[in-house]
Picture 1 (tube, one colour):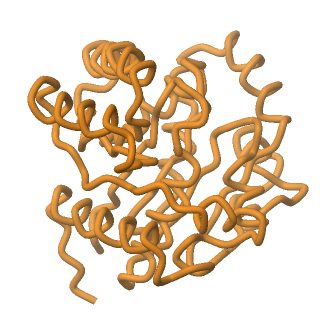
Picture 2 (picture 1 turned 180 degrees about the vertical axis):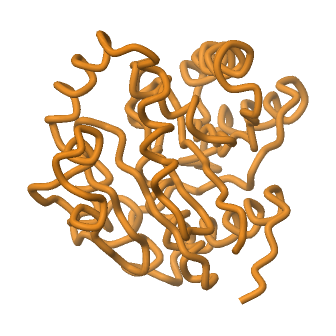
Length: 254
């Protein structure tokens, strides 16, 4: 049995492509004959809505033990989904008073077996849920828009990750920054991309280009790889999936 790769997709800023990245990386990995589970850890349930995986039972019921995981997980496009909804916000509030509260998601993940990859779509904030995710996984991908404000926020994300690595999860590793919504018509995007390459000291994945097809895809409940498989975004995510496999030194023997 292969070792499961656990990866959190993290950025404190909203609208940075976390959910889009989680969905399309998961599907791209699944298309490589890998078993993948995507975890929606955002009370807004964006990942669940994106792939039309909204249902009564969610990760909240898994955390409380009300419903077994087997009755919660749904499959979309070859990817198992552990959905979420607004109840997760109430669960998060209740977690504050629980001893070892930073490890509750880790305890849940330890019950998830039989997958090659586990991807977590984190909430767009430095919440207790995000801290739990970073405590539970081994690796992090940071999707980032190529704009000045996103660059300013990057230091906060890195401080958070390194702080959790130091205090809660010594095995945590940043796989890299994923530039998203690249528009070659804007000079500032190439300038920020060059700054990241020369100043941050972290690996960079190949960028995801701006693509109207990627914007349309969630309206149809489909990944971009399913909705428009020949689009530039679909090609980008397939490329990044291959880079991810290389960075994880993962070899599929199936």
